Amino acid sequence: MLQPKRVKYRRPHSLSYEGIATKGNTVEFGEWGLQALEGAYLTDRQIESARIVLARYTDRAGKIWIRVFPHLAKTKKPAEVRMGSGKGSPEGWVAVCKAGRVIFEIGGINEELALKALHQAGYKLPVKTKIIARTKALSEEEREKMEETHASTLEAIENEDHIETVSDTGNEPAADAAEGPAEKGDKQ
Image 1 (cartoon, rainbow, N blue to C red):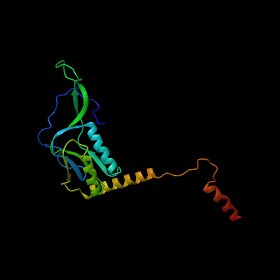
Image 2 (cartoon, helix red, strand yellow):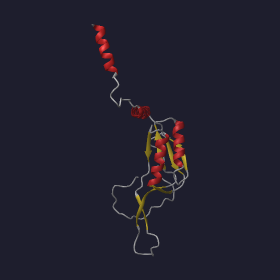
Image 3 (cartoon, rainbow, N blue to C red):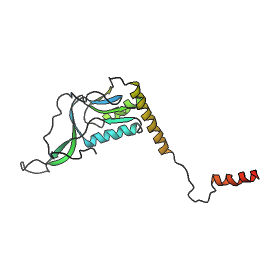
Image 4 (cartoon, one colour):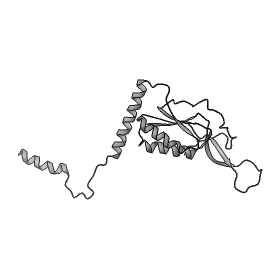
């Protein structure tokens, strides 16, 4: 789960998710983005769940950017406790997501797969979302770099999937040993 390494204050005042996001509302890194249409707190579990959907749906190809981080600690008092006696203890971590905020970005894979993956990830979040395209055009260098990175990850996945069969018993003759004496006999 995502959470800060350390914080200055354990139990902060809550931040409002009302209003429209002025920062982080455009696709900056990838080609496609998932944008929130309403404000809410996104918990670390919800963000991780959507990230897993994106990774699995794309077979870990391409690149995924998470544009929100759960900085804010949410507190909760125990059940059946009377009023007063201070603020409750931290219960979990949330990201403040205003309307218009880009939550995830994806790039380096074909358009159809990216759109389906983002659509599926939207179901894991507690806000209504829409898929937006990058408005600022990618330069040829950036596009080639993204495609090159995508190709190298596919090669790495294929190499990981390739399993070489090796004899378990050791009784089978090796292919090199069987060919060796025959070649020597041919030369004499």
